[in-house]
Amino acid sequence: MVGDQDLSVRGDRALSSGDEDRLGFCDVAKLIAASLVDRASEDGLVIGIDGTWGSGKSSLLFLIGNELGKLPRDWEPTVINFRPWLIGNRDILITSLFDELSRQLDQVALNAGDATRISATKAREAGKALRRFVSGLSTAGSVIEVAGDASGFMPVKWIGKWIKAGGEWATKEPVAPQISELKEALVKSLRDLRHRFVITIDDVDRLEPTEVIEILRLVRSVADFPNIIYLLCYDSKTLSHSIEQAAGVESGKEYLEKIVQLTVMVPKPETYQLRQWFTDELHLIASAKDEDELSRLNAVIDYDGGRQLRTPRSVVRALDAVRFLWPALREAKADLADLVWLQLIKDGNPELYRWIEEYCGTAAAISLGTAGVQEGERARTLTNLLATAGDGYFDDLHYRHYFAEQLPGVEASYAEDDKRFDIFKPVDDRERDEAIQKRRLASPDHYRLYFALAGPEHALTQDNIESLWGACEAGANEAGAALLRLHDEHATGSLTKADLLLERARSVAFEVLSPEQCANLLIALSQVMDDAYRQPPIRSVLGQFIVGPSRTTDTAAPLPPGAGRPRGSDHDNVW
Image (cartoon, rainbow, N blue to C red; front, side, top):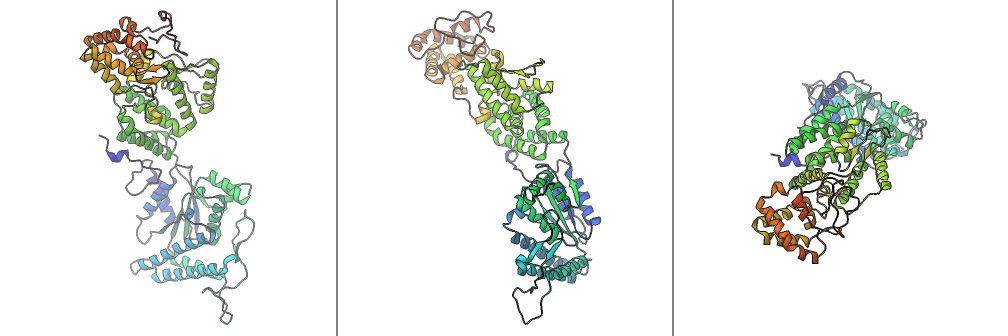
């Protein structure tokens, strides 16, 4: 039984307390945490955590902080989670970081005591030195500059103005120390304190290019202190591009290397790990109705899961899509394997998802006889498929065959003409009826469920079907009245609900109806045909119920005068 909590959308968020580490990042976090305490330089360090978007950088950052919190009190560093995207300009950026550092120094002083190796006195002295330094920065204002060009990142140059730490000029009092002297005093205090601060800055690559430069300047020049370790999370490719835009340098990668002394790459999960994670979570959300659906679901996860589930984020997004859509589709008795296939396609290639949506709509219209596809349109549609999927997408013959099986009228081509597929092929009535019965994506009556959570306008409802079968059980007169009521309901084109229901019933009536119901239906047809003729045309299915549906065009009986064969149909599915 699926619980409500399993259907709650999780969202794209990092791991937090109580979450399961599905990718084994805890072991990596332990090693990094130990290195920050045991082997990191006391002169300060900037470490980059590099990974593509969605690879789990934020989760790894959380786990590192969690591991640091497990260290003995004497060795546990202070972790400051600095989030610069909440801050508007450079001055506030600097002030916010130093304010937080000042608060943490005060906390270190409060926690220090005789039982610890950290001196409360030294902690208070470091706090005072920091506040004097910040006050000097505030008073100096625009006199703080970065020497050298944007590509060099030379140390901060403090221009030759004298300031007073209190903020106002006082000509009669002794001249206050320069900012460089204040920084030297702060550096000495932090070194003597022998307590480490780990400042984490996540999503650096999501900042505007100008903001990226300010953060890097802050880390490298203004706030470059001993026992201060920065952990910067970013995708190096994206960040390098932002640096090139903002700084006007040729190589953002080389520029970044002057700031970041050490890079830790986020481990790339194995494809099997991601598929297994998706499978385990999916079974908590939904379950297949039968063995056939389960088998197809496993194939979907193997084939498209292996292609589309490349990062932790892709797993979370696909699972959330199923969580969001499945309750409504479960009520409609839709096919879970088809839903998962579409969501994997959508997250990996939205344009291919749209192609499938359009193709299914056209195939449904062809199945109903209300549309046709000329050879030129067929060729254009196939060209669009191959262009949308991308080069090499269908090179694997097994995947090509598997992809074709998901859609109506698509056959894989293995000829050397490189066209990959034949599309809009005639669909056998048995295949179509099975898709309708199972409410598959290939069903002309149900395909739109998977895109709009509602059936096509023409689709028959279960009430339509059950009402006619119930009337057939009650008697011929009741069956005739039910047929006329359905005949009054428009489906699509010139077709009514009665047309569709009787056409669908050709291949299943002998399985679902009793002999008495069949007899009553035939009698009802003989009684209401004249009345139906006076209304919009109803197509006769009497012959179909007597001799059964024909399966090939070779033995198709001549059409009655004026009946007309549905446009685009290559087989006899008319009444």
